[in-house]
Amino acid sequence: MKIDSIELREIRLPLVHFFETSFGRTTQRRIMLVRACEADGAEGWGECTAGEGPFYSEEWIDGAWSVIEQFLAPMVLGREVESAAQVCALMKRVRGHRMAKAAIETACWDLEAKRLGVPLWRHLGGVRREIPCGVSIGIQERIEDLFAKVEEELAAGYQRIKIKIKPGWDVETVARLRERFPDIRLMVDANSAYTLADAPLLRALDQHRLMMIEQPLAYDDMFDHARLQAQIETPICLDESIRSSEDARKAIELGACRIINLKLGRVGGHAEAKKVEQACREGNVPVWCGGMLESGIGRAHNIAMATLEGFTLPGDVSASERYWEEDIIDPPVEVTSCGTIVVRDDPGIGYEIKRSRIERLTVRRAILRAEG
Ligand code: NPQ
Ligand code: MG
Image (cartoon, rainbow, N blue to C red):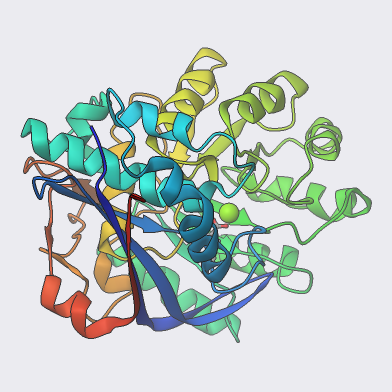
């Protein structure tokens, strides 16, 4: 494989409903899309999952755009590699910037699968044709709004409910939700809103039979999570803290978590995600696919990844209509009445790119080519 050009685009997509976490509220996504092309016109698409600002992690769209233009694209363009699995090695000299790297790397995987005429999920080594789905429900203004949202998602068939928590919207909220829905599969995600000093508060969640508490402590911590896990019964799930398979191995060995949320962008692409999945399988730690409010392109990559063997729990990958009036892929991602997504068998990511819609939504564009 030799990438001849990389096209970057920024599109703006308003969310159907605002999404609020402990780090802020999002109403519109600014999404960077990557199109990687070979000289003969073969192409693949990827999405950068960085946020609008450096609040979920250090990365954000403008930083990712800049590091791709100045450093990552020049390292990849015109360089011959055996396969998409080797693309991350070309960018190794750049430290961090995993979401930016993943945007390029995942586009190369789509391209390679399309060239081979196979669906990406098979090319990655996936083992299931249907993936279990949950939903992530943001912080609401009133508990009644939360009840209504949960009713709606259960009616749609989703297999588990995750709610975002923050100080002031935590123990009482969970208690009332549990009282109203005694038997549902329920979990919470704090996005690093607490410290070890909050252990008593987090321990109070034990009585509500949660599947897990996601990332309660600092985004870059493992040590305190291990101490917290020793003090509570509910399994801790790490999200922000897991940036590589090495991180996964260390977190498991430390006892910092019993479950891992795996996100393609956060670990730098499909090749590293496969390694994380393997480390978790070897450590008997279940993984599930997280979400970053992706457009259809990022969503399709998530679906392919979630067909790997270790993905045994319902993920945050849900239907396009929960996020967008109209997606940029065709058909949109749909969820069955039993809360699953059926994987598609078309080559690559398996969905058609809505080019004219993307063109209309584009607010910024750059085409990068090999020098000389
Ligand atoms: C999580 N996602 O699991 C993330 C957090 C998140 C679906 O819960 C812009 C970019 C907005 C990234 C909102 C879900 C975001 C974002 C939330 C990530 O922690
Ligand atoms: Mg999370």
